[in-house]
Image: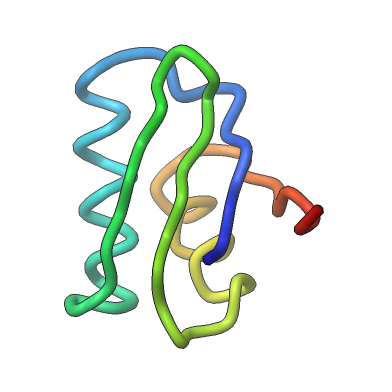
Amino acid sequence: MIELKVPDMTCGHCVATITRAVKEVDAAGSVEVDLPAHRVRIASAHAPAEFVSAITEAGYTPTVVPAH
């Protein structure tokens, strides 16, 4: 499970844009968005950096949340 913090994700449009960016990297991956917490959880075998890059290209500033 990859967890990203996206502090500039503020609305439903942001959620849709970020979900689309994740699906472009891995169409089979699952995406779970917690808008109030500004968190995106992704279940995928792809590297976290691929998702960070795609979401950055979509106009946001994601950072990887270290696993506990």
